[in-house]
Length: 72
Image 1 (cartoon, rainbow, N blue to C red):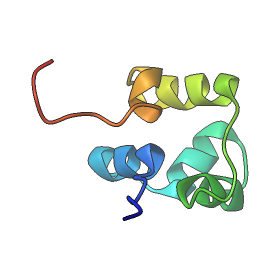
Image 2: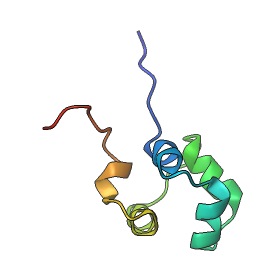
Image 3: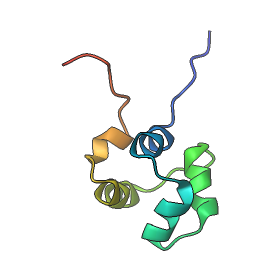
């Protein structure tokens, strides 16, 4: 059975209650680019992930590693 990969960026944007458009405006890029990241059509570079994390005020690894629901 194939497991569905959760897009961490999309999940974090939802958790922070911000939109693709908001992130695009903060980064001075197109909303299409953010949309492609959120739908896994393209992936941001590591440098861009760090920039996204800074804007969202989270650790960059939150955008890379699926978080578990336990306290490990």
